[in-house]
Image 1 (tube, rainbow, N blue to C red):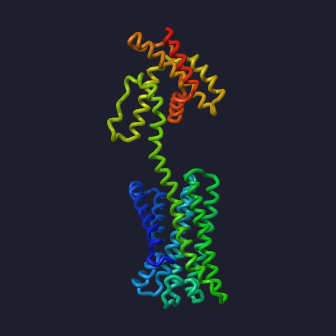
Image 2: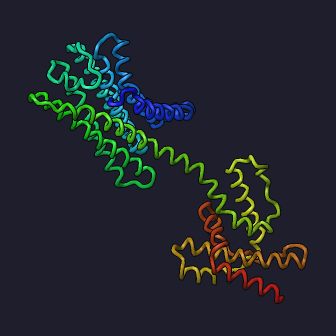
Length: 401
């Protein structure tokens, strides 16, 4: 509120509004998604907080309503709604499928409490007398006015209660999660700690008026910027994990494509019957990854009769000595067997014109059974010294023959 033209409030409010609009198409496609609906409500209410709390907006609300200080219950109501929407979202967000009924019950209680507080705020304002317009210091100016005083105290008590509850819930949850979700929860906790600082400043300034002292500077201009930063941090804290997950979903296919390249380059000479899925530069990355995996599996299928169990077993014994996990050791053994089989297959193809099958199939490649295993196999093919040594030995043996 200390910003006279409201720019410091309108810009973050506009960003939150845009973020809410970006969430509307997914909500339109999934109208029953309670979590997504709660996120949309939170973003729009947060944008509303910034929109109505700016000094020009307060003056405009008073002017349009024809009441000198009607903006006060409006601002208090939207801030209360913001606190309530935060609680509903964190309840739904932190609840698993088995707790859905309980989360829905708590959410209903929270919504009813929020509506009750908002209705009471407007009722107390209607009962009180606030004839002198105060754009920035209504809390302290009317701190001793009947009903207006109760309206101010009710808003601060509700705001503080929500802040304490959110701080406890988010702190408890942040201790058991990791990654972007934990980062978002930390931002929310910081935001609500600032909220508690804001409430403490407001209570101190109002209490000073009750005791005949003047500490109005704590209520304005110190408290409002703290509340603005708090609302922004809380909004970012809720959006960050969702945006991070979306970014991860976008990046993951590119990462897999890059990590599978070594295996594809190694085995493409043995790829004979791959289905062509990727048809050009505009092919989605998910399709390109499927094409790569199809080519790799086709190459493995071609080389399978040439896999040597003894090579696999020897590589596995060596890998188990240095590998971090058993899965990594099996990936190295599979990669070594494939590298050896490729040299054997290439040599026989060059001499006979087609790959000669062995009487018995080679060992089962356990690493090729899933996405993570295929990535480990690809990494081993390009970086493992055991695979490199096996390949070089196979090339030397083939040249002697």
